[in-house]
Length: 111
Image 1 (spheres, helix red, strand yellow):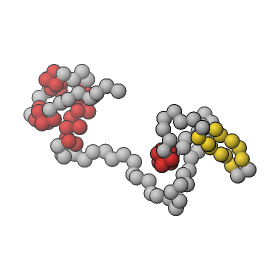
Image 2: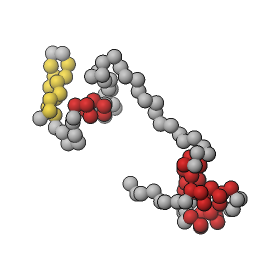
Image 3: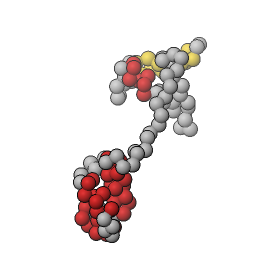
Image 4: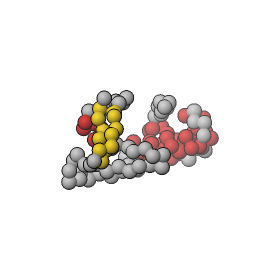
């Protein structure tokens, strides 16, 4: 992913509040599109505390058993093991496993 352009937020806010046309502001800050101008302006407002940022997902509540996690089979037939459980077990990217059907369900064993 490309690194985000560095912009002086104070100057950008002053330029917008002064009533300069969008074209002039875009030339000043070397923005190519109005969407880019709007995105940086919103970032500037959030950075300066003039507007609250958008909050992501609410943190999940801890379940009764911290080792019990719920997952579903997706339309491709894959199951995703929750990140928290992966981190807790110390697995890394590229870890290989053997999956077996057992009497009680599924057995997942690190190779």
